[in-house]
Length: 85
Image (cartoon, rainbow, N blue to C red; front, side, top):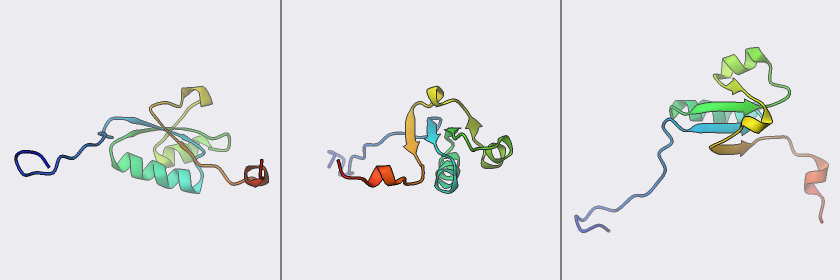
């Protein structure tokens, strides 16, 4: 608690930051919507994302090498992902 009696809160300001999504299907689209609501710039890489869907979601399609700042991976599970080492 700070000397003024208020609790000190630490965090990261998301306003104006860029969120990079790999995968912009159902879940990625929901995450993009939330990020846009927080006034973030959203860029997305998804080989199946059409230009029309990107516009509908309000995201900018980019190449995989352009994802930066914050990163979210939203892709379907694959049997290989669930195998034991």
